[in-house]
Length: 298
Image (cartoon, rainbow, N blue to C red; front, side, top):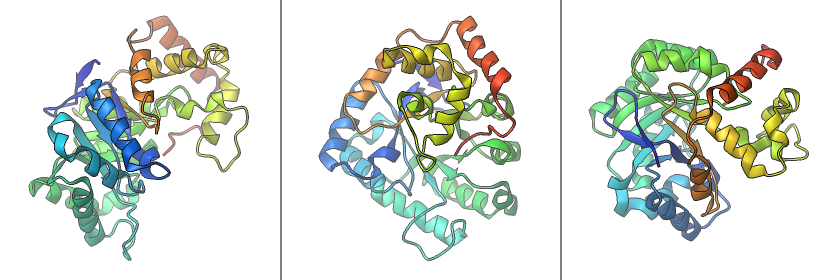
């Protein structure tokens, strides 16, 4: 598995990482252990979670406490359950970070991201101070921002963050020009979340309440030729390789509850980047069809 230097940090990250939102509920500890150990053994070295992803932090801590040096561990703060304080309260954030470390059974993570924090909240400064203190105290090696559109742009422009996690894929391309180049110019590491657009095109019907509804709708309009391939793995491969080919992206996190899925996705990347003409064709279709309200999705 190819690795890339993560911005100006000292980390080298596998281009395919694990997003832990899907293991937050509905799976067993044993299933998580099988999934994560097999992924690490196959070359994955990035695990991204959040304090609001159900039991995911605890599952990860229980499964991998003995392999802490084998991977880079990222988590997020800002939407914690179990506290009486509002989302961006300073004391709540500090308590949430400490709880995440206990759940993950570690004394530090590699990156803590603010989780979809608005520009308005960022401008007040307290949330940034909390992360800077956590870094100073050794609870995290680096600090980052997870989010999209102009909120992410403001976060980048503050110059205080080491890492950007943002949605970017065949159905979500605003970040390619709005934020990613600026983040790279500042030496930030860049994580692509939702890199296969939740494979929304593989579903015959999606309701407005479903997580992938926005992407499903957009892709019906975009009508990329490769999405018509009868072999679903071929279209997923094309979508994944598109995201990998975006200049500035260091790693892409994909969530799954299936132990074999990470290795399957890793195999899809064996051909590496898309040919320039294929990448440009997808971008051109976006420019032709995308509407102004097609902004980055959290």
